[in-house]
Image 1: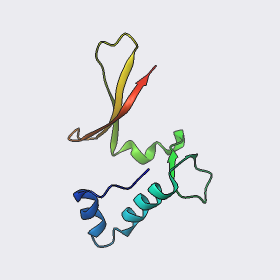
Image 2: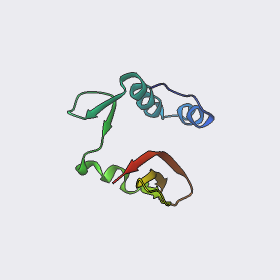
Image 3: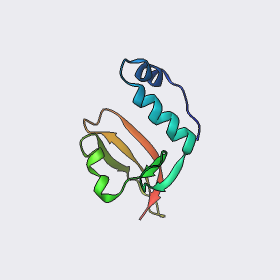
Length: 93
């Protein structure tokens, strides 16, 4: 997983006091996905059911539904105000 520098990334990491954003993104790219957190390790981790409060106020899970005989859906997350969305991939029941 690589780190992509975008205008938004540069803006966020240049803001005073926001070094934690840069560090989070760099560590995510450096260590990659590591399953569930067991504490004391950096990287990208799956959220446990007890972690759902982290995204409760900011993200809204969504799916795109269209006629698909295989039952696949495009899934993603949207901002709570539904002004932005990130579609992550395909999923099925």
